[in-house]
Amino acid sequence: MKIKIGPLSLDILLFFRLWLAAHVFFGLCIGIFVAFDSVLLLIDQIAPPSWLNLLIGTAWLLLLIFYILLGAAFIYFVARFLRRSSGLEEERVQRHMALLSGLPFYALCLLFLMACIYGALFPDRVGGPAAFASVAGFIGFTLVSCGYLLLLRFFLGRSTAIAHQEKEK
Image (cartoon, rainbow, N blue to C red):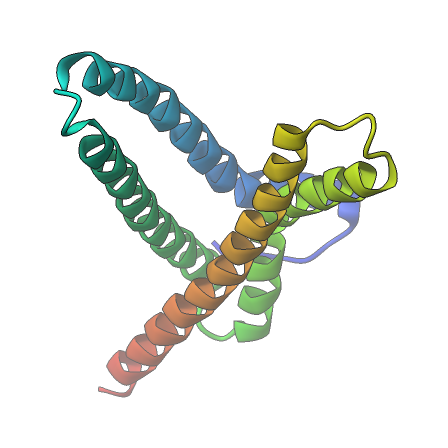
C-alpha cells in the first residue's frame, strides 16, 4: 500500500494509524507498571529486611531493562510499518511519517514542560512531589522522544540499505 499525501481531512485515518502504535505502547507500559506495583508489594511482604533494598532495586532495574527492550521492539515494529506502507522510492515520505508518528511522545513532553512552567510560576500551588514528577517527566519524555527518532532513523536507514542491496542482486 502506497501512502498518498492528500488533503488533511482525508489523512485523518493515516494519522490514526501512525499514532495507534504509540498509544498501544503507552497502554502496555501503564499496564506493566500497575502489575509491577503488586510485585513490589509482594517483595515488601516476603523479603527479609536485610535483602529488601537489594531486591526492590533489582526489580526496578529489571523493569527499566524490560521497558528499554519493549521500546526497541516497538520502534522496530513502527519502522517496518513505515517501510511497508510507503515503499522504497519514497524516503522523504518515510522521514516525514517518522516525525509524525512520534507526535504522542512530543505531546507528553510538552505536557510535562507546561507542568514545569506552571510549577515555576506558581510554586505555592504546586507541591514538591508534583514539581519533581513534572521535571522528571519532561526530562524522561525528552530522552524518549530523541531516542525514538534516532532509533527509528537507524532502523529505517538500515532496512532501506538492505532492500537496495537485495534489489541490485
